[in-house]
Amino acid sequence: MSLNDAAKAAAVKKVTLLDESFARFAVRATLAGVYLCIGTAFAGVVGQAVNGVAPGLGAVAFALFFGVGLFAILLLGADLATGNMMYMVYAASNKHVAWGKAFYLLLITTIFNLAGAIIFAAIMAMSAKFADLDPSHLLVTVSEGKLIKSPQGMLVEAIAANFVVNMGIVGAIFAKDAASKFLSSSRSLALSWR
Image (cartoon, rainbow, N blue to C red; front, side, top):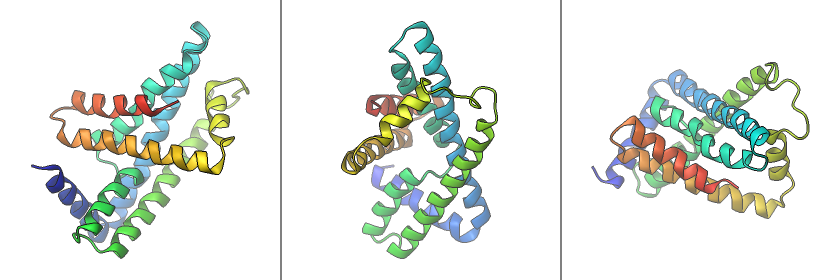
C-alpha cells in the first residue's frame, strides 16, 4: 500500500469513526492526551534522575524518552491532533473529505487531547513525584525555556516539532512490528528536541 493510499484510508476511517461513534472517537482523543503526558512525565523523571548522576545530560535523556508517549499513541490507536492535522489536510486537499468535516474532526481531537492532558496532569500534580517540583527540576526548566521564547520562535518550533511528529507517524505506517514503530516514533522526536 502506498503512502497516499494509507493516508486516505486512515483519514476516511477517522471521519467514519467520528460520524458513527462520537463517544469512541472522544475516548481515543482523550487517551492520546493522556499517553502524551505519560511519555512526558516518564521522560521528565528519567531526565531528572540522569541529571543527578551526570549533570547536563538530563535533557538528552528527556529527549530520548519523550517519544514513549507518541509510541503509546501509535501502538494503541489513539487520535492525536498533530497526526490528524496531517491526515485531514491531505484528505481535504485531495477531496476525500470535506474541509468542514476535516476542521470539525480537528477541533474535536484538539479539545479531547487537551482534556486528557489536563486530567492526567491534575492526577500527577497530586503524586509524590510531581507534587513539589522545585524550580531546578528538569521539567520546570524545560517548561520555562519554552515559555520565554518569542511568539515567532514558538511558532517556528511548533511547526518543526509537528513536522517531526508526523515523520514518526508516517514511519509507523510502514513499520511491520512494535519495535519498528518504537524506533520510528522515539528517534524522530529525540532528533527534534532541544
